[in-house]
Length: 293
Image 1 (cartoon, rainbow, N blue to C red):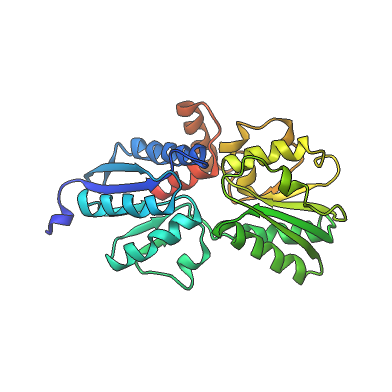
Image 2 (cartoon, helix red, strand yellow):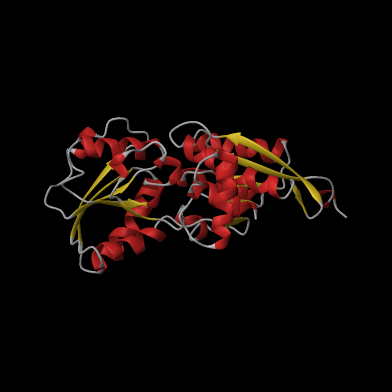
């Protein structure tokens, strides 16, 4: 029996617990800790030691934290990042050092396409996956033909918008405008003012605190009652809905998880999460719970 097959299984986590996406990162931790406690922190008869590092959502930090977990803590498995840019940042390192790595939340498409590695397993989704379905729904069911886009200017935003544009325009629709705002935008006024008014709807891709601020300012800017809002599922994920009010009502988004999902497994998970944390579990919590499984 090798050293790696003896003693505790060491799992390292490197994702944001502070910064723009802190609320979602904390839900990731909640979901993973919930699963570890359910199995009494034991896998295959061995104790599990879980070490978490805060990246702050900064890709350079993600690399530093990953190196610390691998080279100092000697973890057997790494769970890396939240933002797509974090996933891309750490990819070459884990591939070079052959670190078994789970990309649970980073949805960066090339991580399992052009930059795929035998040492990386994805347990979540790819960036454009849900926007394909939403584009079809917007065109075929909602009857939209002209849409303007506003999105966070980073890897995930571009990839998710790309999926929506591809399907929507293939069906015959037209994306007449794309407005990009920096990740961590505090004032959306200058960007909202640029949006064209000759459209059927606005498609938005915002993450973390950006989503909370965007939704509020979209209403304050007088756009909510004039232009239907559709968007990424992480725009209205449960980790962010807790900080929203009426401004979120009526928004249509697409995601593979909802705390309202009515299956036996989902209900058990929701009940356990509500009992422990007092809130509906978000996509981030569900995905890390599933990652644990």
